[in-house]
Amino acid sequence: MPRAPLIQINVTQSGQESLPLNVPAEPWMHVMLRNLLRVLIAYSVVVLVLAVAAFADDRPAGRAIQEEVWALPITLPTIAYVVRPVGDGPFPLVIMNHGVSLNQRERSFFPLVEFRDAAMWFARRGYMVVAPSGSGYGAAALDDPEHGIYSVFYSKIGGCDNPNFRDAGFAVALIDKWIIDYMTEQKLVVPDKTMVVGQSAGGWAALALSSQNLPTVRAVITFAAGRGGRVGGKPNNNCAPDKLVAATAEFGRTARTPMLWIYIENDTFFGPALSNRMHQAYTAAGGSAEYHLLPPFGSDGHFLIDSPDAIPLWAPIVGAFLDNHE
Image (cartoon, rainbow, N blue to C red; front, side, top):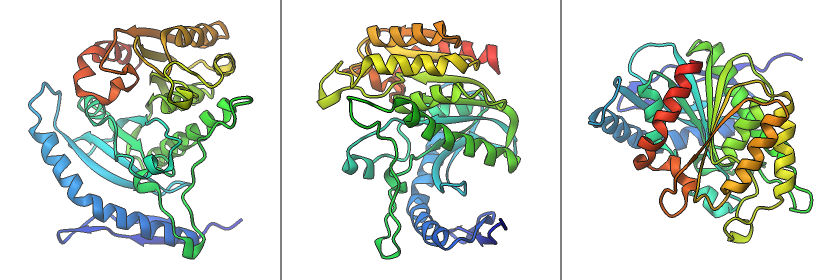
């Protein structure tokens, strides 16, 4: 099947033209990319503010970093928050997956990045961090009914009587793989030195990715990973805990990628009893995962990674893990 022709797009800001972006010239791509560019223009001021803040941060840091917003021309065009060391690179890659919301209104107001301080921590360690905005979230919630284009949201697990935890994880893991392939093909990152990090449903996707043993991925780190938490808004009320544990074991049967799992005692989505069961099932099936249960943090430890105040709690653990697997 012949490849679609390429179109070249340049985004300008204050008279300065960016590097050209070559993308397939499919008709639907024209509409999607036009909307993506509108979003990028809206975010351009935000990027400038973020960049200034990054350089002005007076906390201990290994190197200067810069923050950007990218439109990634992968199979499913994706907007991503990017933070990286200042310089030409290439750098090792970290992909950071955010969690999920089943509320359409909440998804439309989803922030560009939930865990900015955590992302900057990885960048100061020398990584190029790419945090994709999930399909159907925030700036990626692009609808153009006139052309029959609607944002795609595919992270639901189905009914609690028979939830499909497995495929929900693999759907987001596929986006991660596309990003890894694109960044590698463009020679933007060091080949075979990728870390995948995820929180909540994003951590579940990272766990699914671990079962595929991609040669480009050195290790995987998850914070409060899982699916089906807080059904009906009730704390510690999982959709189908036994099936979640079974799905975790299924991932573990083929997974050989080193993993670090971080959970928090007062996580109301995936409490200690459930996360321990998941870890035991994963490792018993053959997976390799280091498990840490941190003390209570804030009103709900599930959102630990979102808080800059939590970095002193998890950074020593993550740093030691990276030292062993970089």
